[in-house]
Length: 438
Image 1: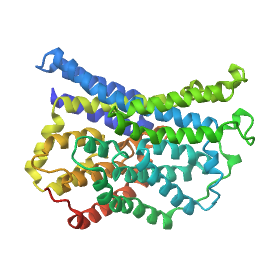
Image 2 (image 1 turned 30 degrees about the vertical axis):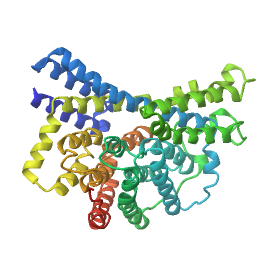
Image 3 (image 1 turned 180 degrees about the vertical axis):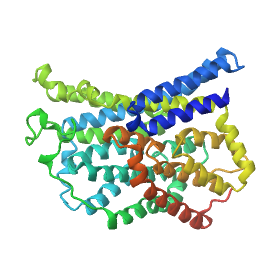
Image 4 (image 1 turned 120 degrees about the vertical axis):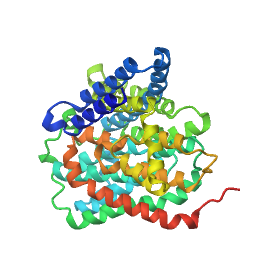
């Protein structure tokens, strides 16, 4: 049973990686893979059907929390975009030099990612570069660097990356300490690839008139240059809504997706009130209903499929056995965690961190132990090495239709250089910052 599930998982993964030559949409493959893994588990397992259904329900609860968070965030970004809210920012960025623009975009992504989270930030920033970088080939490099910067920015903040958040909620790390210990390694992780691109990046940003990109340019509303009523309000509300999510979580202890849905609901109501005099057809592009029609649902379903498949491996304890095997064969935690980081570029980092939290106990490794901090860094930034290794990467892949192989050739090496550079920096500085248990 376990062997057949692993085989199906690997075949599914390969089909996703080679989506373009195979010509099958990766969302379709992911859904089939996820469902098949559970089906085999249910048919071949000695567990009772009730137990398996209960496991599925638990995992599905966690998955849908991520999916609804995603849906909320994507809709908010689309709504702000419909009101051309991001133009307030894009009109301020005037540089025509691709290299200086890349630095600006990456630093904004880095800090925004720590505030919002790496997924939302990647979605916001890719929407932004669509307007700033009409040249598709150049834009792909920008998108690749956004993935690296968003993951690096998310790793050092307790709310920036799902995995750091998991460790924070689980009590393995504390907020101030993780910021203090990881901010430098995270910056190194982003700056090394940037420095490399300074010398190798060739090409122009392109001209706004010449681009043939998809629905992202809102010129089809007819009034491209006229200011739209409420764009400042929507930008302000959208960003405030996204930033309020971690605050909501801290105050209520309810899961973050509820905060995201609340923010969406408020924005939705405001968007209905801004143009009350318009008739329905005129109003359509500026409503949440219109925004919902534009968000990328296939990528949400892709996410669902992948997470379901990994959840099956988790439920069958395949991940747990693998972790124990690593512990026996390698021994040194630093090597294991560095490998977990590299592995998180292949497998989603959420279940990997979940498995690691199960592997190491808090009795043995006190909160803020080097293991947890290093795990937050590695799992957070290692995902950048392959485009399917992180939520941000998956979202960007869906939005910009980035090819897995293209990313492998052009960005993976840069991401790996940054990952190892940051890891070395952490291992050098952590003895000076270590928190000793009382």
